[in-house]
Every structure is written in structure tokens, then in C-alpha cells.
Length: 389
Ligand SMILES: NC(=O)c1ccc[n+]([C@@H]2O[C@H](COP(=O)([O-])OP(=O)(O)OC[C@H]3O[C@@H](n4cnc5c(N)ncnc54)[C@H](OP(=O)(O)O)[C@@H]3O)[C@@H](O)[C@H]2O)c1
Image 1: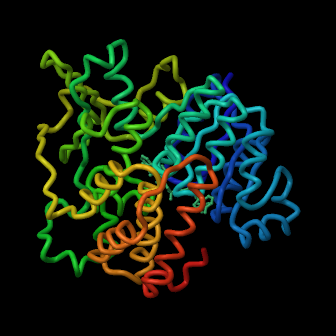
Image 2 (image 1 turned 60 degrees about the vertical axis):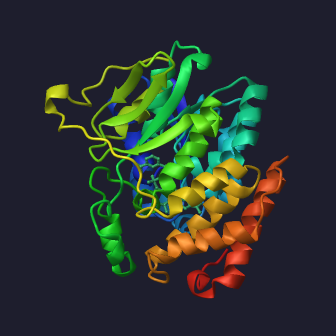
């Protein structure tokens, strides 16, 4: 029985993780849960997992729970610092990080430093702190197991092969909600248009990141750190059907691709069960798949993508600035304060203004994230009006 803590249990990935747990009650026991604002969903999850301790990070939501005698039993802490205590003190065999954004970095590091393996969906923490996380995992002798479908695919395609035999890794991208829309109309797109993803049902931020292709930029950085691949060996293609999740091309011309229906419970099951496999009724027969197609990335349609690739190659604090600027821009777009077309402008201007510095510690990464958010607050007042950070 694997004891697991689920950070971000109320989100899209978190709820899918708990569905996978529900399907395998003899394999997994939930010993910790963490939510930010969605206390109603958290309450239902606590009822399903009465032994689990839980943390609420948003102050107002935490006060609501703490003031309710029926709900506060099991509340083990409030605020971001409580995530670290939950991770360290819960006696978990696996921490599942399904948080969204930079807030996920410190708990990931805390888990690894405590010698607990991490199943990670929170790509922003790998983007900002990849070097630190890989170092901590190596020191503690524990693994970081991906949950992102592309990285779960790469892990499976690489299994058993020598790294020197890998010619390149090809990440697939659905192309997002605006894939078939003329870029001349992008200035007028509404939030609901961008959130109407053609193949995946996900949280709001990653759905916007899919439309801009920032998501694939973040995934390139994630692949670089998780698999030790140089950026020159990581390629991206548009694959609208989201059936092939990644491809590894070998030096002899052979390619191995991983396929599955676009259902996050499949990569989640892989990550929770790793290094074993568990039987499930998820997935489909190949005869049920649509015709598969692949196309190159059109950078005129996705101007954020070359910015993300350049930040990846700059290294140091550049990916942190990229990710922080993107978080602020996406939040502003979702709140109606920024047009869609301003997202690449904001990211580009932050990357230009804040040159990359070397990263030696968590403090360096936190400082770079703070600096990027401060710079954007000062220079993009419309975007950051109402941004409390
Ligand atoms: N969704 C997918 O299919 C998918 C696929 C691959 C990778 N990912 C990655 O997985 C991560 C989670 O994505 P998601 O789509 O599940 O996001 P989501 O639905 O927005 O859920 C985010 C979770 O994080 C919590 N949260 C939000 N802000 C927080 C904060 N400041 N402090 C602490 N907790 C906070 C939310 O709590 P409340 O809901 O209680 O407010 C929620 O539990 C992202 O990094 C994303 O890129 C997602």
C-alpha cells in the first residue's frame, strides 16, 4: 500500500489523481491533501479519505474552514509554509505535486530533501528550479516521476535504450484552442474561446498555455531536466489528435512513439504505480483512434514559443522569468485585464529587461521570480492591477 500526499487535490490533475486512487483502493492510501480556495471540493475529498491530514493555503478559505467545527478536524495547517510541513510530516511514500505555478517549487524540493519521491505535474517548479530539484533527487537517491503525458511518454520510449543512441525527442502539441483560427483575429479572442480546448479538459492556466504554446516551451525545459537531454535534441510538432504523446527517434532511423487516448488518468496511473504497472480499463484500441497527423510549429501563430525556447537555451534564471511573466500575463488575461495578444509582449519585455543570472540556490530562484513579478507590476500596470503578490 503506497501512502500518498496530493498537493493541489482540488484541481484538474488532483481530482484525476483521486479518481485513480479510488479505482485502486488496495494499492494507494491518501494521507495528505492540500487545496487553495476550493473548500467545498476539499470537504468531499476529506470525507472520502477520513485519515488524511489537510492544508488550505488561501487565507480566507482557511479561516472559513477553521471557524467551522464540523470541518476543521484534520486541518493540519494553513498557508504555503504548511505545505512543507504536510510533505515532511505525513509519512508519505509518494508526494503528488498537482499545484499550479511557482508555488509548487518549495514543496517539491522539501519532499525530495526528505527522501520522498515526487510524482510531478507542476511543470512550473521544474522550469524554475530544475537544476536544484535534479540535484536534490540525486543526493537523496529518490526519483522525480513525470505526470505530464509527454514526459510519461518519453520515459516509456526511452526505457532500456542507451542515451547515446537517441537522435532526438519529439514532443507533440495539440496546438490548443486557437489552432485553426486566423491569427489576425487573435486580438479579439474571448477567454471562453481560449478555454475551449479541442482534446483535453484541464485547469485554466494550462489551457491558455496550450493556446499560446508556452506550455510546450515549459515542457521542453521539463524534458531537458528530467531526461538530461540537450535542447538541440528536443523537437516539437503539432499533432491535433493528442493520441501520440511523444516520439523518440534513434540514430539508426527507428522511432518509438507512445500512444493513448487523451485521458490524464493514464499517465497519472503510470506515475502512481511506477516502477510497476497496474491493470486498468482506461484507454482504447488503435482501431478507435482517428487518423493521425503531424505538422511543424508555425511561429507566427505562436509567438510565445520562440521566446520560451530562447529562455530555455539562456538557462540560469531566464526560465524562471519566462514562467513568472507568463503566470502574471495569463492571470491578467483570464481576469479580463489583458488582451490575448499582449501575453507574448509582456513575456518578451520581461525577458529582455531581466537578463539571465546563474542559479545556485532556492533563494536565487525565489529572488528571480520576485524580481520578475515586481518588474511587471512596475511596467505593466494594467496587467497587474489587483495582483496581490
Ligand atoms: N490539467 C491537466 O490535464 C494537466 C496536464 C499536464 C500537466 N498539468 C500541470 O499540472 C499542474 C496543475 O494543473 P491543473 O490543470 O490541475 O490546475 P488547476 O485545475 O488550476 O488546479 C490547481 C491546483 O492548485 C491549487 N492552487 C492554485 N493556486 C494555488 C496557490 N497559490 N497555492 C496553493 N495551491 C494553489 C488549486 O487549489 P483550489 O482549486 O482549491 O483553489 C488546485 O488544487 C500545472 O502545473 C499544469 O501545468 C496539468
